[in-house]
Structures are given as C-alpha cells and as structure tokens.
Length: 183
Ligand SMILES: *[C@@H]1O[C@H](CO)[C@@H](O)[C@H](O)[C@H]1NC(C)=O
Image (cartoon, rainbow, N blue to C red; front, top):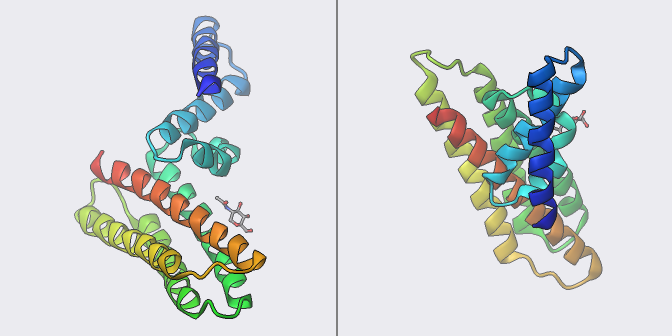
C-alpha cells in the first residue's frame, strides 16, 4: 500500500517534466507506457500480480486498451498452458486436467477472436461477446479445479498454487476485456 502511494507522485512528476520540457527522448514515452499499465492494474482485483505479469510488456502495450487486454490474455494463456502441463504430470488430478485443458482451449479461442475484432465494425459486439463468454468459462474451469483439488502432498500444494494464480490472471484479463468492450 505504501509503495503505491509513493509511486504515483513520482510518476506524475516525470510526466509533468516530460510535458514541460517536451523531452523528445524515448524515456518519456516509456514512462507514460508504464504508468498506463500501473494505473490499469489498479482497476483490477490483483494489482500486484497484474504489474508483475504486464509491466515488462508496457512498451508493446503503448497505452492501447486492446493491446492491454490482448497481452493480459496471452499472459493468462501462457500460465494456463504451463499449469495444464504441471497438472497432467500429477496423478489424481484428473478432473483438473480436464477442466484446465478446456480453459487452455477457451483462452486460445478468445485470443484469436480478440485479434480479429475491430472497434466500430458491425461484428464488434458479437466478437466481444464471444471473448467474454470464453474467458468467463475459463475462469469457471479454474474454480472447478480448485474446488475439486485434493492438495495432499507438496507437489499438489504447488500445483494448486499455479491454478490459483491462473484464476487471478484470468480475472485480470476479464477486467481489461470488459473495459475494452465498453469503451
Ligand atoms: C507468452 O509466451 C511466449 C513464449 O514463451 C513468450 O515469448 C511471451 O513473451 C509470453 N507472453 C506474455 C504476455 O507473457
């Protein structure tokens, strides 16, 4: 909590100096790109995890709500795929293997659909509806896995932690998707 209070004024001062002196260097745009990610992450339920996953991609996101949603979705997909692999290596996690496998598929579909979407096109709302449906389904799958998970051994506890993180990343993605859809 304390660090975020300290970060904001420092960032604001930097932006102000960039504007004041019209500093033409890339460092100003890099700073505003990272401020965009930080501020967007604050609108999610898990700002710290969000920053951890997305801040290194701030330069690529460049203040675009669509790229923000896309990058969050790809980070979620990556993590879900890794988790799916971990679960497959565990015995006794059969239900989880199945539902998290479904989540990988749903996230892949939503990445493709979000990529196709064009703001202002006739299909836009239908496309965003598909994306929201698939990502919500992925979140439900993660929850189903966690409800079901018998975390007995050390490896199970570790794997459950993976699923927990993936569920939180999915929630972050959904926040950014909803925001992009509603703009
Ligand atoms: C997703 O994984 C790919 C391949 O490992 C990696 O290059 C990319 O940076 C990752 N993307 C995100 C947003 O985490």
